[in-house]
Structures are given as C-alpha cells and as structure tokens.
Length: 490
Figure 1 (cartoon, one colour):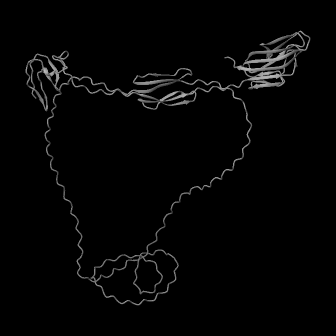
Figure 2: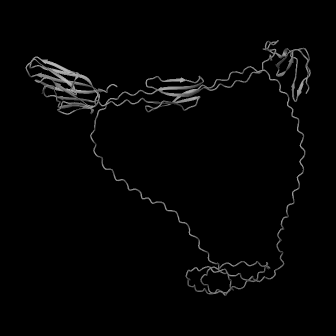
C-alpha cells in the first residue's frame, strides 16, 4: 500500500461527485499518488467546477465548506403506516334512566372504546288478573298396558382353560420279516412304521431283459370278516435290519466331480500411507472502510395504513340483574361488536287489593251507641279484612293505611225535633272525621248520612264498628266499604 504524505495548510473538505468518494484539498497543489487495496481504488483529486452540478451552486454556500455540496441519492420510500385498530375497553352497566355512552380512551388510530350501557327500567306493575277457577275436567281414559319387555340372555361366559396333554406312549420296534408268498387278499392291515432308508448302491449298467409271459389271473379270495375297530398302543420301534449285499459292478461310469475346496483366507490390509503436509494459509487482508457518504434526502412518506372497520354483530337480551357486555368477535382492524344487554326487571305483580263491602237493607232501630249489624258481605277481596254475617264487627288483620266509606238512610219515628249522631269507631274510639249529625224537624222526614275518613292501623289486629247515639230512629240501606290503601310510611 502506498501512502501520500501531504504538506498543506488549507482546509480539507469531504465531497461527493459522479458516484466518487474522496478527499479534496482546496489548495493549488497537485496530488498524484493514490491508495490502492485489492480491486478498490481510493483516489484523491483536486476539485473542479464540474463537481457541484445544479442545483448546488458554486461556490458552495454554507454549510458546504464542511459537507458535500451534492446531495446523495433519494432514500427509499418509508414503510407503510400502521393499520388503525379498534379494541373494547371497559363495559359498565349504568342505572336505569341514565344515558348510554361510548368513550375512546385510546387514540384516533388505536381506538379503545369504553361502553356505559344502562340497564332497563323496572317494568310497570301489571294489572291484577281476574281470579277464575275453571271446572275440573273429566278423568281421561286409562292408558293401554305397555308392551312386555324383551327377553334378553346375558353373554356366554369365557371358555375354560385347556387341560394338560397326556404322556405320549413308547414307540414300537420296527422289524421287517421275509416276504411270504402272495396269499388271497385279506383285509387291509394297519400301516407299519417306515424303516430307515438303506445306502444307495452303485449305479449298474442299463440292461433291459426280455419281458416274461403274463401269468394267469388267480381267483379272487373271499373277503375276510371286518375286524373290530380297536386301536392298540403303538409298539416299540423295531431294530434296524441288516444292510443288503452290494450289487454287481457296473460298466465303466465316470464318477461325479468332487466338491470345490474351501476358499482361502483374505490377506491382511496394507498399512495406510502418511498424510501429506497442509498447504500454506493465504494472507487475510481487509482493506480500510471508506468514509460514509452524506445522508440523502428523506424518502417519500409511506402510504396510509388501512382504516379500521366496525360492524355490529349479534345483540342479545339477557336476564334482569346481569351485567352488560360488549365482545369483539372480529379483529382489531375489522371489529365485530357482539352486545349483551340485560332487560329491565319485571314489574312486581299487582298486589291483591284488601277490600270489603258489607250491607244491610231492611230497617233496624237506632240504639244507645250500639253497633249496627250487617247481614250481607257484598264484595270482599283478600284475606286481611274479615266480617262475620249479621255481626257489627269488621276485623282488620294487617297494619297499614285504610279508608272507610259509610252510607245509610235515617227516618224519625219519635216526637220531633230530635237529633241523631252516626259515628265510625276503631277499637271502641271514634275516628277523627268519622262523625255525622242530623236534626229532624218532623216525624215524616228522611235524611241520608254519608261518612268517609282515612286512618292508620299499626297493630296486627283492629276492629271497625258503626254506632248511632239516640234511640227512636230507623236506619235502612246501610252499607260500609273498607279499603286498604298502602303500607305505613317508614
């Protein structure tokens, strides 16, 4: 590597020109030496007017004295913007009547929606249904007898284990006797055991003698009686019979080729030759890294990310008192909101009104603050206000606020002028506002008396009565209605 030693007092500047990177001196000296490494040349030249093409003017304006006047290539296009996302934050169930709301607690591109959904209001109290009991229906016919169940046999049990094999009998001796003359054909005897094969004699000459005359066919012997089928034990194996005499020597026959001898053993492997010497390692030389060029202008802005989409999926109404929920069954970029909203609680059933109307039409005489009697229970509802027919006591068995209405017609049957007072009593005491008075001026006079007042019952039992103060009058068309308005205030 050759290195040029410079002696110069002027400022050095780094510049880019025609895809060339080098060091330039602003003085008038001529630099001819160069640095060479491998296939790369780092040349050092004097700048000239061609190294700052438009739009970079000459001389280079500040801050060009220390940076390249010519810009680098345009940078690559920036990455595409991130896709917008939508996520579900908290879901709160509000009180009935409050407004619903959706608040984005995230950003415009990464929305996080927090929902507040009011539960439904409690339904209004339903109207009281009529109390109607229908007639009892006729008894239906007896159903047919069910079919008999199927007969089911359980599965066969497993097969028992096989018993042990019996001991084998001894093998009988194999003895071959001389061949007797051919007798008549008797019954087929049992097959004897096969004796051992004798040695093979030498092959004799192939000689075919003349065929002898065919003998006469002997008479067929009588069939012997069939013996009883009895299998006796196998007898012992007989001794091996003597070897037969060798046959006569045949004609000259070439014997078979003897067997091939065994293959000899493989000789030992020769020794491995010595390894050759390693070649010399080539020199590893890395050239110096060239200076980094100036940063090019910023590339164009990346394309916008895809806009997020929001769709409404299912909307489910759940039971009163459950929590409202919103679930995203899609993705953050393509949200599908599934809403679960509780219905309002069912309004309480209308309470059975506690009410009674009692009456007595025929005239009855007035008395000295004696209670009037009522023969008829005209209307009654509920079980907390009771009256016994022909009594003057209306009994209340539940605390609360009540209102009483009374009406009757009064006629004078005594010397006039005369006055009468009608009073409504609670447990023997006159109720405030429960008094009416009338003075008669003639004996043929009639008067209508009406009373209405409200009162409280704080005990579990209270008795209401209506009395007249003075004898000598007739009371007719008597009617009283007692109605429970509400519970006592807390």
